[in-house]
Image 1 (cartoon, rainbow, N blue to C red):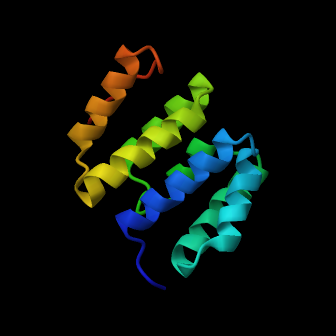
Image 2: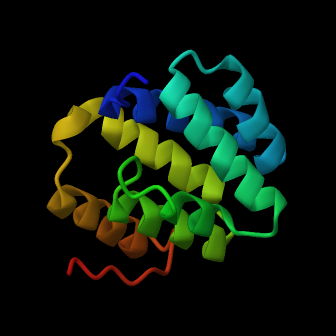
Amino acid sequence: GKPIKAADIAIFTRQLATLVEAGMPLLRSLRTLQQQEENRTLKRVIAQVSDSIEGGSSFAEAVAAHPGVFNRLYLNMVRAGEIGGILDTILSRLAEFMEKNGPALSEQQLVDVVKALNGAGLIKAEVRSN
């Protein structure tokens, strides 16, 4: 299938954030985006993530199964969002930074994002960059 570009992940993250912020349950949001997704490769990934969640996995665990698509820091942010009960906020921030910085978003930038969110008291997360 077509490769998944960073821009595809940014758009997916933005759309997911919008649905979750609107109060739609995560699984239903994912299934909705799965139906709409035009990139067949990403569609398949979203389907697998949805299936994992349906099977009892957390969103973070489901995302962790696709390291080629979601980098480790994406995973850490999602995990922090789930633990802190602010997944919608985290997804929105992630989308914002991905849109602004494009695929060139470095691990260090994401570490800075997490530190900033931590500082603002928005999340209590530990970020290990190794």
